[in-house]
Image (cartoon, rainbow, N blue to C red; front, top):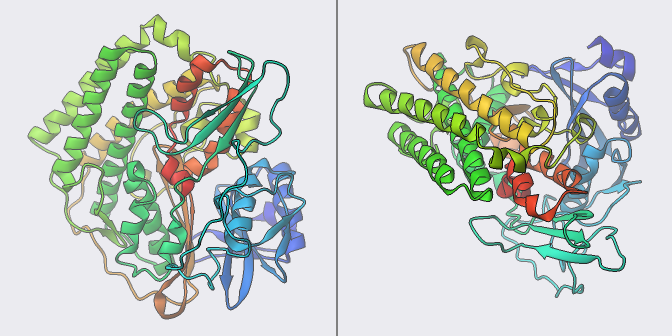
Length: 514
């Protein structure tokens, strides 16, 4: 707190949920956030807007000294000073605010549209209170004939190859436009948000009992992490103490979700290398974990389990045949991983592919295995303990090379930590209920919630309005944080390695699009 006070000249307020809160004028915020990041080693986490009582507010979230700090500034008009020139991680969040709230980031280096589709009418901003959820908007026909590219590389022999948004295989909608003279990638342009669903708007007014079910739909393969981060935010805002048994189950189910996602990543890398047997073996391991999930909860993707205050029901016991199956999955994973690590034709494709420097990862606020693969020692489970993680032993896995192999290696080692955490949580499972009653929300109560999902830090901000209804829910997913970095790993690489580099990020397009 002393570092914040020294830099801002003001003493932040300690919130009921354990973080810090500081209000200031917008021009002051534009100075303070970069100063904290550059001179006090604060980590930029999120930037977003809200509307209440007919006024807009700008929020910036940073982590400093192991604590989340929310800086809030009321906006007198529709403009605010951009942070993006000094903090590249603010690029997408500020363009998102411009689209969804109609707020203009003055001085933003690239203020073009991000989320809303071409042909969206001017003056229609979906996150404003005046915009009804059920409103139908008619799009004008798009004017451009070529894909969207920012400063494309032009010259003799240079082609612009649009890849997507519809692609072969099971891929979500995204478009990658490659500038290339043949084999080498000169520049990559990302075009996302084809399936933007307005998830933050959907949360508004949803009963608290149903809201975790909405959070699960942010990203299907992160269902448990998304609903857990939401529940953690609500529980902090309400002052709810989750029972120990539910906290241990949350660890088990979180780690099962991490396992099947990490193993899916390995299977896709094997597929990209045409290692059909290895791809099949890891795909079988993923299927076995999904079936274990279903045996425990009734859902392969762990949906409908979390609720504010704990769990909706007692999962099936991880004992007997299920415990034997879990041990068999771990044994087979260890065997297959060892064989894959000895396959030179595979390693040749991922070593040095898609390099991401520690400096770029930090400047763009990378999270999860993408950050840890570039040497950034960052993990919510340890840094901001939740559920039963403070009672369990594990090591945060990092690598320094920053390439696809480093990210691959981090996920393999994290999988072994997940096996260990599940055994520990199951072996120390306390007796008792899995749910605690929640008090009625107080108008104006707010909090942050987080969970370390398979892709990294999933962050939720929520605020209750009148009569205890959800007034604002901000979702900052790991995929939204990491996707802008993907283009930085591609320049100078070769087209035939594109799949390895994309899979090494292992992002969820749904979680990015929102």
